[in-house]
Image (tube, rainbow, N blue to C red; front, side, top):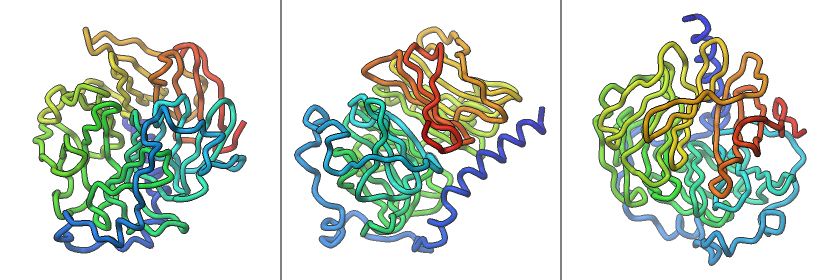
Length: 342
């Protein structure tokens, strides 16, 4: 069992290293924390742009008609997050070279800001992210914390520009409460400590994170209840009911690979020699093992459910496959195989 878990742990770590390799080499991350980060310069404000009038999801054009998107028929490499950003029946995939979107059976990509997005979280009005700038971006490197409420056309800094690339972010879909674990010291945080912000990263509160293990991979925050957070790690799935002050390891004998909250359930994935996907009731703690398509030496990596249609769910795997279900995870259709569109 230990050898099997070690194999999938290597897959998790290798995926992160491969995704970030090129960006880390060109990073201009400061050796010491940057001071006076509270004030964003006028130059940075110009680079970031102003939030557009389309911040209301109901006013955003369909993706296929949006001026910042064009048809996409390439390969999807290094997915760093996915979800129904903007609550508009379109699935956003954050990759190392920009946003890809699956909408109404077709694929599109962003024309601008084709960045290496990390720590991507879809929310009701858009998405939150970290990462590194692409070749067409004037943003500092790394991003700190950014948000976009206009499908990624403009990006607004919420702080820590040029200081930290957050791989571990969890954001409530409706609450916008942010959980973060920085990999390095910055002007507001210490490396390896867990923080929460309830005011769009204006201030951060360090939380104790008692019983939380190491080698963590993915965060998830409940869409409305800011006290609930889950984390997938090498030792399994950690669950907190007290805003990250303490955690319980709710699995045994498996590597944790994914976590996701809907309003009533915690979905989590793992690997114990075989891939697992479990739906755990937040009301009574009961669990249902969900049906998965055939995954050879693979596991569920990122998962999301359509907030407008609970029967629709999507996941990506460590080997670059993407599957969608429209019947409550009873059956799955493959959209991408090893990065190639199907």
